[in-house]
Length: 611
Ligand SMILES: [Zn+2]
Image (cartoon, rainbow, N blue to C red; front, side, top):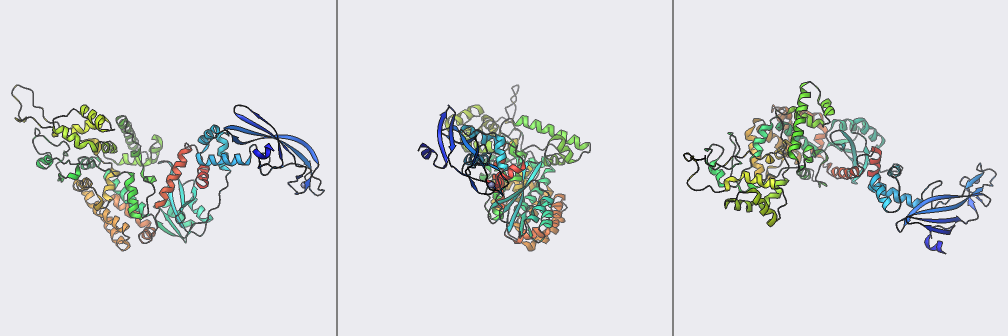
């Protein structure tokens, strides 16, 4: 009666006793069927051989762990032709033979492992009254059978990082069904080729421009049409420009540091040619070059540094596919990890690394062995080796973005003669809800001292015998505003129509400050148009012109395009794009993070495919 009420799913078992502690509930259950079926010959038998007790864990009840003590029996098989003489009674609806937990507890725990991973899953399980070790949870994941997914007709291939800059795997996505088809443990040609051979019938392979994938696709699915992913084409263009800009970090800083302010003074005074005593807009670049300085209203805003999200936007424009997530995998480099705190300490560490790289490079070590020795990514090593001086890191602009809404107020206060940064910081913090740091405010104030009216009578000549006049100090340009080569390169590939006014100025400065950029910029823009607008017929001509530019970075880009010519041409004529793969990669990253980086590849793969 009570058994029927509490355990209606257990026909054939009688509840004999319940005992409870604070944390557990033990149910004593006895098998009451008079006969059992031999698992080998399927004949039923009523000849009891012996009795025994097995204990299995079940789903928790009211937060308590539940244990079932099952009194079950062994039977003789009386079938003369059956080799089995004795068999144990089975309870197929409840528990697998010789298992220590019921089927439904196992299913619950396994789902927990798929959703949360080993350690977090184990914690949740313990809280819920079904304790289990992380190791066992992971064993469940490993044992999860994967449903075979149909071979896709259009396959997207891209890489993802196990550890950024060091080890990579490959993600395969069905571009029509929008599902992950499989993960591969590396990004080699052979691994991809092997997978493709095991999954014949793929018609189109959209891939990034890594040679390995091209080779793998060629040998694994020779009849499939290969399409270079358009986003990767654009990204490769951007990377070529980035390398070009990295050659001269000083010039890059010069061009991107000074964002003109709205001050009329900037127009009146022009670049640094006026006498030092005159109040000067402190942001005027210390440069003699023919740098256009337009006092534009729109330029007053902080530089909208193109971060990862603008590349996602770029993908959207290019591929006409929604960019599911703002961060393309390969686009997050060391810049993304800069925290707001401790920039100085971080700069010193980076500087030390820079010198270490340079000295190893001088000793003739290869990029890769330097990277291995110093635990740096090969990209960072390459950047350090190529730069003609220490490449300062562009800080993210979030600090300035936070300050931006308060700038009109600060201007007013400065114009009224208040230039105490600490005081101003307190004002906007307490009265207006500014959440940024005081350091940002004080840096801004430092750069805008010229807004404070100078007392009449002129301060240009020193008073005889007195102290020298308080000239408006020319503060060093704020390092915060320099763009990284990567960010500047994104500006160079952005549609001119989409450039903010200040970004347009930076592009102009970059072109004016460097003959190389001046040559590269129109070529880059033309390439972007060709890719975006599918001008396949203009492609050959562009290749020839870019090759003739004399710029090593463009020439090597062109050589790469020529090596991959048919796939690139397909990208200019076919509508496929790997845009959605990014979203899948991001989901994968979430799973990966939840596994605390200790997951083996097999676990990761199962969790991504089974979840
Ligand atoms: Zn039998």
